[in-house]
Image (cartoon, rainbow, N blue to C red; front, side, top):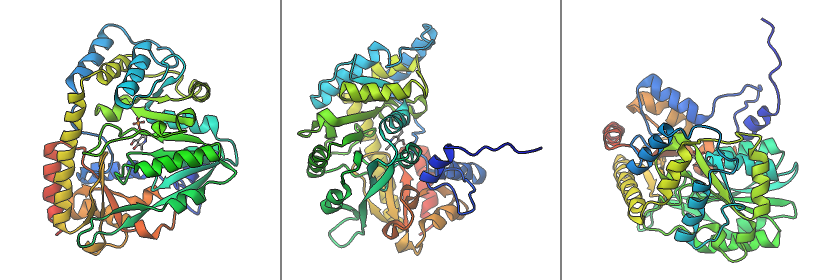
Length: 407
Ligand SMILES: Cc1ncc(COP(=O)(O)O)c(C=O)c1O
């Protein structure tokens, strides 16, 4: 059979995400590759960030009721009023931010579509987009597809030492240097995937100042906003000068442990939200009709439910961090989110990618190399790997047992 030419702009996205090799072959993204490896080898999958336990019962019940009540047809483009109002109430209740549900909210197919709508809708060829590196892989794919130029600000690995735990450092001078006359946008992911860093107030204030100085859009990817462990989350939009230029992204899937539902949202100034909707309508058009009222129910649940979700996740974090430390990894205990980064170098593994490829055979666990979230050549992250702890007690117990065999 003659093969039809399947080249096209999708390859720009693949190239941006580092998935095209020197010969032009495209490989699957690392999460797909590692999840397939987990299935093939029967390994415990601590690679992909999805909880394997149920979200709040009220949210699940509301979705089932909406399906049975027949709420199964195309919803309004920007989301059902019940959900857009619940998002506005949520922003007021937790952050004191006022958004008009009619003009300042757009519901999207997960935070993923919010990112695509924003970047494809607002980044012009040649525009510079600042990212903190390591970065969520969709950023690089979307920026490349839009013809933008990605400018990275490193979060540098700081190994643990006596009296000082491992972690990540950001040099404000690097952030200042990243802004130029061509800066269109800065993507701020706080709490941050994969590092679990919650950005300090000083960093967010500096982002707001620099963005104002350069007339840049701030895109605040805050999908882990409610999954923090004793550290307050402060939205980037709440810093002086930021509100009028910030698009805030949330994810019902992450907040309520229903990642497969793909209900996300963008809020911000009306003109920017219009632009995002202008793009979104040609992507999914609309999404998740019966899941939207269920996420609205979730957003209106009492504070105690949010606290319970975060406390529960914190206990999972502690369990996995303890086990990794006991095995001999240098562990950066995350302040938030689904993931922990651990350095495999103390165990004698200098190459995190090779380590992750060998780990399923070696001890039956899957993890993701941090290099997958970086541009080529970041030497300080080479031996780092990311483990997900948003897993059930049974999954974690088995993972901990298997990781113990590495010691
Ligand atoms: C930082 C970050 N942004 C966006 C997303 C995508 O979220 P959603 O599942 O709502 O599309 C993820 C998912 O892992 C993420 O980690």
